[in-house]
Image (cartoon, rainbow, N blue to C red; front, side):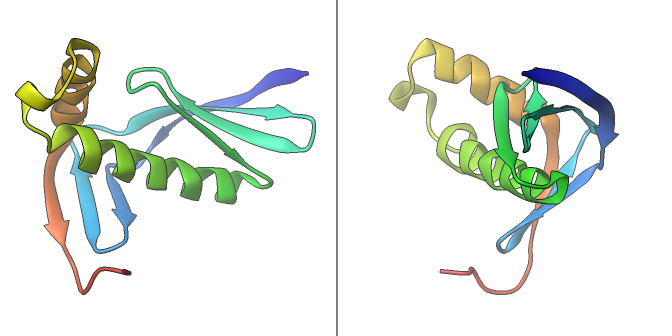
Length: 106
């Protein structure tokens, strides 16, 4: 059984690997709990992930955000289906700029 734990406006910066995403505004995240598992959902971007703690769920969300951005927002439109182009537009509107830091994790 799932119930909404809280809805938060989460940060304007997300750090993942060697990138810091500077967002145009905080992401609205819905946090819910299903049994002993925390679920994080962002309706705008359609990203949903989870973890055994809220912190783990947030870390997984940031990794999923990074994956979506790197594999959708940075791809040429002619390589994407229409639904992915719409997702790309939302990702691009969400990110103001990306700062590179250090070396990639590999």
